[in-house]
Image 1 (cartoon, rainbow, N blue to C red):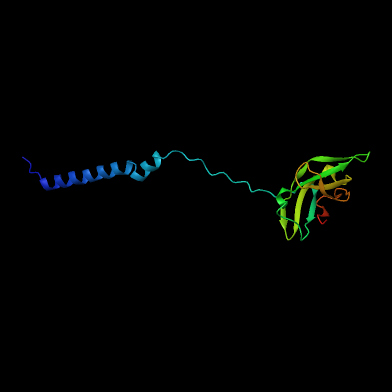
Image 2: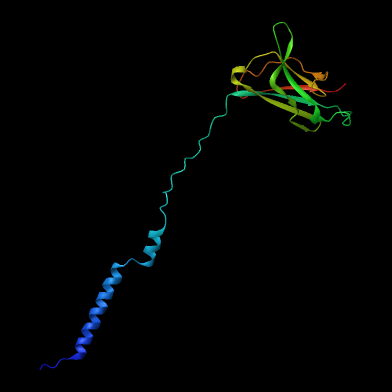
Length: 166
């Protein structure tokens, strides 16, 4: 009978087991790969369009500058209650309120109230117009400006001054 070397058999079995385990580990996905595989698909980032500078719409503006006298009685009328309206004159000489160009003053600073309206390009150069200031909407006028024409150039501002001095 042949004498077997048991030590070498055990050694060969251990080496074979290590090689099998290494092969098995090499073909199994790593925990990182498993975690990435379980994430839902994400959309790729899309390039963001950069806003382009838009040119300002062609047009102009009219501005009412109301001068308040130093003796103005703020207890009777506050500047925020004054009503302003732009009127246009027809060929017979009658004045008519411009729809949309009516309202209270926009601001008051250093004894002067202001109201501004935008003028569309199609209306440049038209007229005559005038500003009318009322204590309240529907009251008799406190003051009326001289007639004026709308600006004739885009970007221009026509400023009309009216004094509420007695």
